Every structure is written in structure tokens, then in C-alpha cells.
Length: 66
Image (cartoon, rainbow, N blue to C red):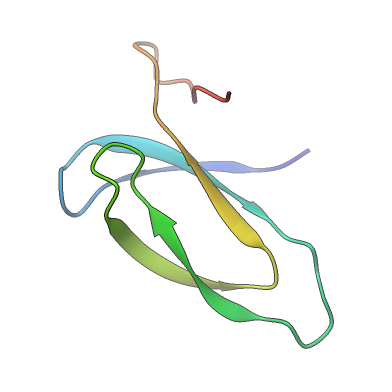
């Protein structure tokens, strides 16, 4: 099961969720961007050997995963 994190965008101030899909390639760690699903701007970067997905939240604060 993947861990989903919540954060607030530093640009538009909306709360959103993101998850790290870590494929664990040997020696493959790079900085990947986390993009706000509302304003579409890069919010921050993190080191990973995978990639990130970000999601808008519904009225109850749950990620809307399509």
C-alpha cells in the first residue's frame, strides 16, 4: 500500500495530496518535481528513484484518484 501525503501549495495555498511511486532502480535517484494539481506549478522537489503523482482533494479532504 502506498503512503499518500498532504501538503499546501506554496503558490496558490490550496491543500492537495501526493504519493511517491518508488520503482527503486539501483543508482537511479534523482530530484523529481511535485506539481500542484490546482495551479500546475512546481511546488517542491524531492529525491526519489521513482516518480510522484499529485491529486486534488474532495470536500472531505480525500484524494480524488482518477
